Image 1 (cartoon, rainbow, N blue to C red):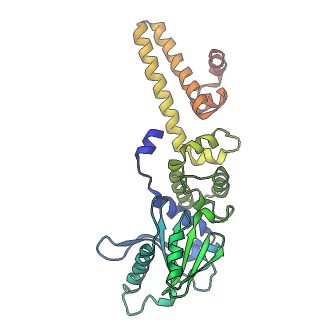
Image 2: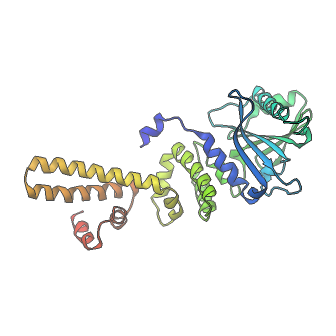
Image 3: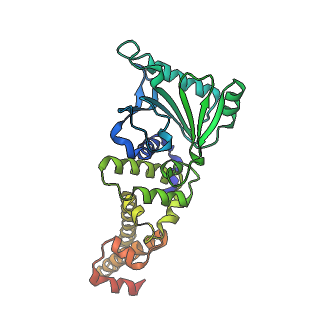
Length: 309
């Protein structure tokens, strides 16, 4: 699994879309999220457009305090840079969106905002903005407003500097996620019941796992602490269990063929089960009872297998 993860390019944006919606979940009834909004008939689009449906509602999460009616959102993955040219490209997207209304001035300039998200602090961008006469203000931890010669209200969100309690979904979208952030995210989403919210949490989690597999293996070892994580990762864990069981069965078949006797096949069957139990105990750091429960060994047979371990 680890080798496959390394060879596959991590798709960060689906995780970010999920995290963005979870960040603003308190006001989701007044927000409309349009992912990869097309700016023309050609493949020119911005990452996320958030439409605030009620003007007089203040968004609870401080990321949304800047929001007006139309909010252009750009996400830069950990591998992406963020230069002054990227700033102007985002400005260009916003201008294109403003000019695409079906009637003249349908999208009003004063109703537009820009939000750019990135994990690392964009020092060079902020310096370039300063040299051009613009000012950068840290309005909230990790949230920087750009003032001065700007067409639209603009904020740059540095996810690694966001507060830990309120923004765990964005903080775990990192190749260096912290265990504390992972646990805060799990605690935050474990009570979600609506399918869309659960899908967003799963999208965040899958990206974070792909980027931090070793850390998640470590977190998963304490199942008492991570019951919510086990539930969220059910598909991943079930796949690993199936892989271990299949491997045990294959080795058992080989052993049975080599011995060429009925008792060899019976012994091979026990060997397959024992191998699956041992693999799960080793890789998942489970007890024998937890491993046998995972592969659904009948209660009446567990003492026998435990004696053979």
